[in-house]
Length: 358
Image 1: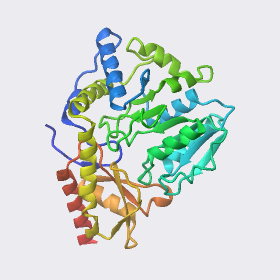
Image 2 (image 1 turned 90 degrees about the vertical axis):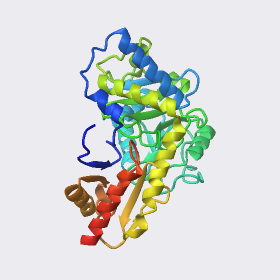
Image 3 (image 1 turned 120 degrees about the horizontal axis):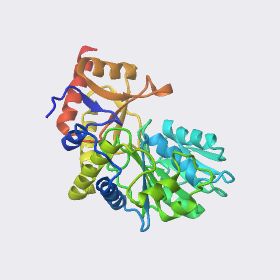
Image 4 (image 1 turned 60 degrees about the vertical axis):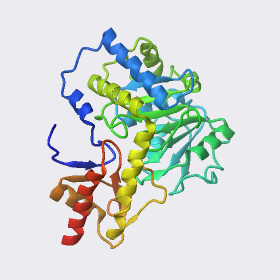
């Protein structure tokens, strides 16, 4: 077992389970063969099970970051002659806006402004003639978890494709593609799945598959080509072979232990850490935080970014800074991956040291 030289509390990458790290240390095998195809088939089967995807759903495996999967969903599923509704609550909501603008798709932007959308009132003015709603279920930049049931109702009322970035929500907060009528569920490897970066996936419902626009899809991200090659357990281009092998092991572990184990671990870690926050001059920045993350803001006028720097430089403890207007105002502590209360004790001690020496 490798010695722990640093501690990660960032929303990707996250602490990796030992069995995942062991696979990453092996030689990369050849992949254009039946053995690797069986691995891909198995990964698709398990992902469909774990996301509760509706009958007839498929999975696209992309060698890309989560943003690549977001762009692929935009370019494959959305027509250029009808508008979409984008929930914009921060950096990643804005990224959906920019991806739609880049693809010349008319965009109605719903600024959430810290509202978790549970009442539905903020969404009410939008989507009368739209084709889809795009939302980052967990807006990682500000630690905001949207109400998926309210989003589901809105999409059902407007007959919209429900396109959900679940990259940081998957395996930390419950979500069910069938129950919540999600048509495209976007995932990536380096957050709740606790794998190295480099692999993203889009789980497509039959309705989303029917919506694919192959004539406008980009060459590399053409869903039709991925679905065709997926019928033989392959991808059109070289996949992230090692990460898919790590995904295979991780999914088998998840199936064996059940999703409740992962939800409870994230919730337990979040609760444990938050129970200690009152000992420092920090406040919770968001009122609708997910299990995946705690976002904190100094209440004594200190610079949040300096706290982040201190933890990294003095203790090799890495929490996530914010960018833009929030850089000096807030920092983020993730509760994803192979995290335990003992790991959080290291962070708590480091924060105690910071305030003792400040």
